[in-house]
Image (tube, rainbow, N blue to C red):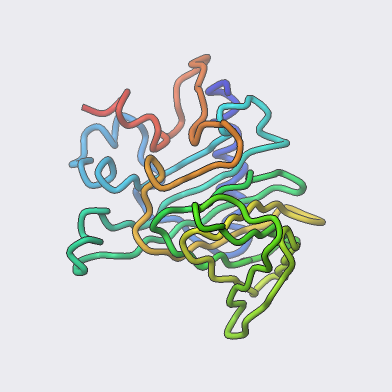
Length: 226
């Protein structure tokens, strides 16, 4: 992706988020220079901040996702069973924009439709090896009730509805009818190590620097922050 495209997505996404009354934390709006001048170790360690991905496929409108990690613990605390063991994200899935099939090794997550169109999730249960089971029904909690779908069944969430996905449950999702604002509340989030995709794709975008970044992405930290 070109940096100019990333910058435009940042502006559009911020406006979309604000249209639903969700206000981003102050650190979201730090320039790269301002972020460099702060004690930015917490943002690097916890992967907090902006994240725009096309999964390395260079077709964001068809396959991509906007994310912002608002808060996050650290993975090392999970083994201790104490500390900040949770994370929160705000995301945007555009109309018909696919977030491809994947599962998490450790993360349990609530996926919440915060507004816009319907959020559609395609779901599969894992087999004994953790791969997709294309024959087994999948059961997930949806706002206090258990919902069972056939393998590959589509769960459609209206604004205000949510689903809990336990580690191992395979899922892909997209917006239907309109762009969707998504909330995610989960156990500690580690995007570098806790994603297993069905396709051979990457987690982050490859950025072509055709202009200066408006704000840094979490995938920029290693390059721009010292």
